[in-house]
Length: 95
Image (cartoon, rainbow, N blue to C red):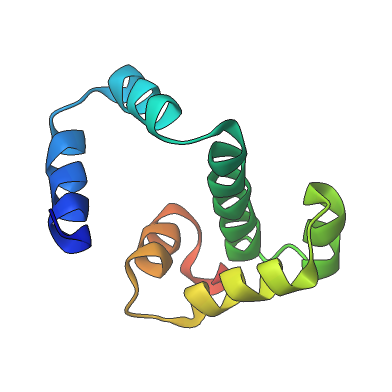
């Protein structure tokens, strides 16, 4: 199975699961460190979308400015899926 086929299979598998099953799936598939990294990255993206200062985000999550900048770059892609999700979640002027 190629990487692309495997990723598509994961997407299709997740579509059929409820929230608790998705959490169990991710917990079984990923290490605790990987789960933490994903959660922190998502929290950073949400904070950036609400115009939280980057230095404050670094302090809050005890992470590097490089990681925060990477997340900021994701939000700058106005046609990106994540940018659009967060734009719909928060005031469009925040992103």
